[in-house]
Length: 147
Image 1: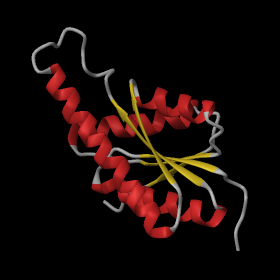
Image 2: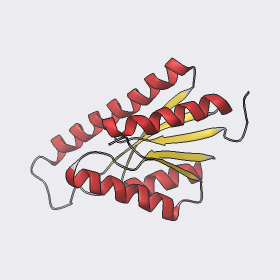
Image 3: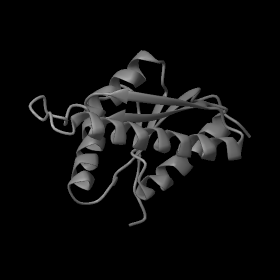
């Protein structure tokens, strides 16, 4: 049985292993509703301070490569399930970019995890999810990691 309640789903990913459960849920929902998935990763250029010049370009390239790997992972999960996945790499403040993309691209649902990376990154990812929940006009499904 399929449903048309969602035609376009964003899976916001940070590339961490903790995000795999959210990816899995998003792909399953997309398969059930025959939705297109947008694998979205935001390069956090907001955190790359304007005054930080030494190594800034190298750090940006590392973050960009990590983002590409994260979206490819979602695409691979989608292909294995027969779900169309479009990769999207954006730059800026993560929660703002996720919300803006969803609102400007007729997205029906945002899927994301609560825990991303560890330490400070874990705290920041939690605050990204919280900001998206608080400010998005699009429904948000937050999937807890198994850790």
